[in-house]
Length: 205
Image (cartoon, rainbow, N blue to C red):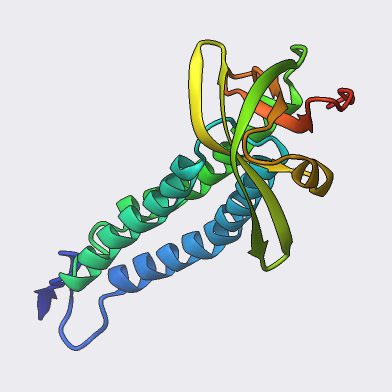
C-alpha cells in the first residue's frame, strides 16, 4: 500500500521512510555545507574591504543588507519547515542558499574593485570637526572624528571618519581637517585619509 507523503507530496510505501524527502534533505544539507564557508568568506571580505576603502556617508546600509540576506531566507526556510513543506520546496531553498552566498561574495568584490580599480586622482574636501571619540573595540581602538563637509554637490552631516591617532590628537571640535576623497570606480566615493589642515598630503594609493 502506498501513501502520499504530507511533506513532499510524493507516494511511498506504507511503513517506509519517504526516500524522496531523505534525498532532498541530504541535498539541502550538502548545499548549505558548501555555501556556508563561501558566505562567511564574503561577509569577512565585505567587512575588510569596507575598512580598507571606507565609503563616504553612513555604512549602516551594509549592515542591514547582511542582516536581511541572512534573516529573510532563514525565516522562509523556518516557516516551510514549521509547516512540513521544507522538502517540497527543496529546490527553492537550495537556490536561495546559493544566491545568498553568491551575493555576499559579490558585495565584497564590489567594494574591493570600487577601490582598487579607482584610477581617478584624489580630491581634498575641507571638513569641520563637530565631535571626536574613541571606540574601544575587541581588536583595538578606533579613532573617530565626527565631521561635516561637502563633496561633489552632496552634503555629509556628522559623518564618522576613521582617522590615525596623530590626526585624532591634533584635531579638536571646531577645527578644520582635510578628507582625501576618491570618486570610486563604480561611483561610490570613499576616503583614504583624513589630515589636519597643516599636514602635507601623502600618496594615498
